[in-house]
Length: 57
Image (cartoon, rainbow, N blue to C red):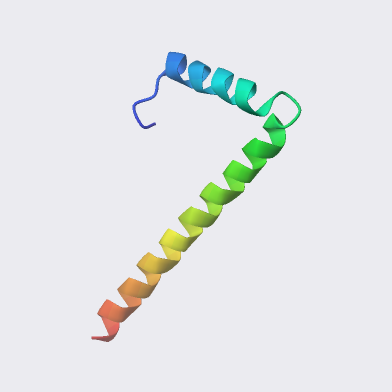
């Protein structure tokens, strides 16, 4: 996954914990998950539209 191993993931988690604090970390994680899900959905829709354009030509 992006070349990140366990030590790197732990460092990222610690930085996020310091930056957001323990009370806001779950909400930040949820927001990040929703943003990634929306991005993937948008990419998938774009690919589907492009395939449809190619098939109609």
